[in-house]
Image 1 (cartoon, rainbow, N blue to C red):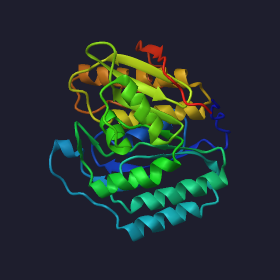
Image 2: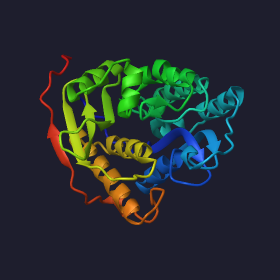
Image 3: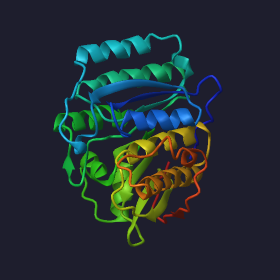
Length: 294
């Protein structure tokens, strides 16, 4: 299994396409902060503007019309700095039509820099239900996932995107391999230990599980943080197990420290040492499964 080469000094920019909130630590604000703290320049294309996380109450949703979003994408595609981008990370979409624009951006970045990677976080639902229109989730599934080098779905998103019922670790691995991308990192996968959660990294040749204890009342934004950390690890040229352990340790430690301080949001600025040098211990194991043949 080939690893992504470390990002060249002149190709360490990351293009993030995700939601933006005015207040709070979710969506693109999480991804942007984490990647910039790790030394990357971030291009940020918002898909929707919200006052705060919708779980905090009703608020105005501003979504740029598809023509305007396409125009912004075209501006970026025409930039002479496109070769500086080493990765594209997409998350929450504000409309189904945005998927085609993101796909064009990915293609343009890869043309300018063939080593660039694309991570798709198919943000669409949790706890057994979609929280975006079905048409938007389908656009992510049909347009973006086939292009992705890496996908980072939670367990519900994996079930919905793959169309498979998941009741075990073996089911999770099979669904992840059916999804398409070479690397699928399943957050909230079934854990072996009680009162724990599992981050399961599935590739065509191996599966690695990183488990840690559940933290009650965890703030939102953990998936955005995991996507940022995993992207940074790939761009640094680390191996899969090292990236998984470091990413899981950062997310777990950030959540635990934020909850300990009774915060409703991830305390990214206050606890940014967790981004640089996480100290949390993560249980990591290689799963003995039947890898696909190359």
